[in-house]
Length: 345
Image (cartoon, rainbow, N blue to C red; front, side, top):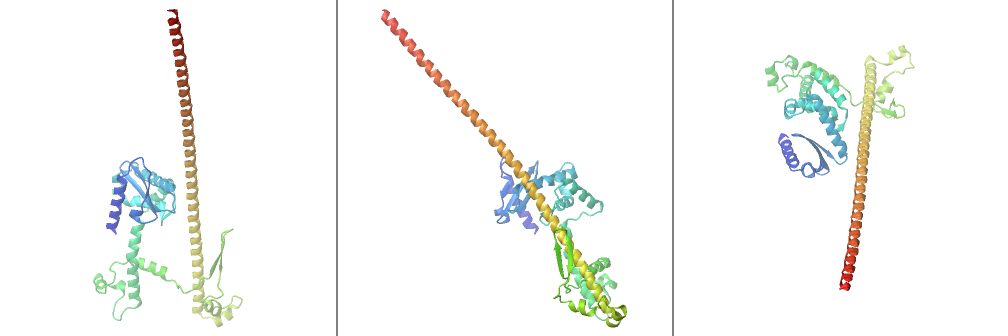
């Protein structure tokens, strides 16, 4: 809800404003977002960029991700300021969606992000992922209501597409659904989900995907009994199989191909996600190694300073001892001279 979002923003702003400039950019956010959450921020002039994540993420990696986000915004707006963000809010979210999608980092190269954003803007698409999801939540119920009505049109009533706006309102149907959108969604949802697609055997060594039918598939009657064998002659097939059965076989084959393609797409997506994890892991390792080198350099510098301080202290002590010895010898000489003077009298 918007009220909850504003409350979280106020809480975060209150925490950030009270922090000094010389403290860490990492904050435990359990009190704001619940257990096992952290907050990373960077402050640029009057702008705060804040990312919230859980303990499974690396703080330095998220900090570097903020830097990528800011660099990309700088390429979009030249000099990023509050007005750029206010008047180009959709563009900012488009940039963020190209970097992070579904909680996963999909791109960290600001040049590639800029190419994708420019392509989206050139095609006139400026909606965010949230806006598309909200629109889909309105379109899907409308589609179902129209489909149910068209499937059971009462006698004496017109089709939805022949109704006026007033008639649609009277029958409590959507008023502005486009026929093209309905037809496209009907094709998409017109899939017999009871058909078993079989098993997908994956050979990860050479990325081959083999479709195998399940011997215990519930569609065994459709695939094995109703359809003629490929070894039979055309005349035998015509005598034993109707056109309806051939249509069922074609539909089953089409759905098989669809499932095979979908599985390939899922596997490819998982591979891309895993590669993204590997890239992030490599970046984290590089950052940790650089930080370790910097720490080693600082330790060496501190040790050198301590050695120099010890040498200075030793020299100072030696000088003090020499001064004291010289003072003692001087006092002895003065004492002897005074004794000689007293003896002469």
